[in-house]
Image 1: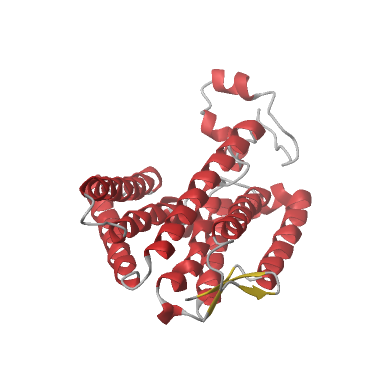
Image 2 (image 1 turned 45 degrees about the horizontal axis):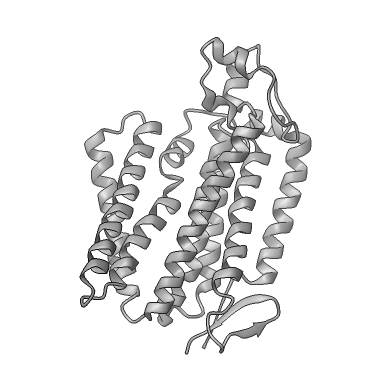
Length: 302
């Protein structure tokens, strides 16, 4: 029973699309942002608040899967996994709550918290049920896989942001002393001067898009068939659901003036590349029954 994730032909297609969009953005980045920019757009505001939710729900999923790894005969290990489970779910709830409060002006703390608990609770129940018959080895590999992807993606994106210091469209449109900076220009000579005038450092973190990179974690839905064989054959559908969500979040970031086209394309590319590399590394020796799938990552259930 073969499960193929990150099929080579689909990743190539997505890669080509991203390269084309990168080329278009390299020429018309500013003009595209000028056309779409509308900071009060409901669609943009909503996804500003909830667009990063896939990465946070990955934390919740890890917390739930850790409960499946509990060995009741090992009390210390059980206590450790329970504490880690609570921690990962706490991170997910707080992250979703804060995200909504930061971007949705009419959102109250209580409502945001209730929504976050509800979303995380639903995901926890679904993951727990889906993983009921998964082997300990499978669960362990998926936990490591997801955790490494989220941590590496967040680290890489933020390192690049701090290095590039690209000003955001919303700041460029509101200040006459800030000019557009192409994505290939590293660093900003005006940053210190503008920050001395009261401009927030966050306004120089346009490249790449963290929201889009975190949204791209939705593509990790494709590993669900590894947890539950009833989903076998739906890995590509789940993958493209994640791809579509990522593109929607990418568009919303351009609309909000938070990022340019090249920012969101790079954010998505970073997340996808990390996922593909980690899939190769983590599942490389998944079992001696691993199959050759013409370059795809094929995993055969024992």
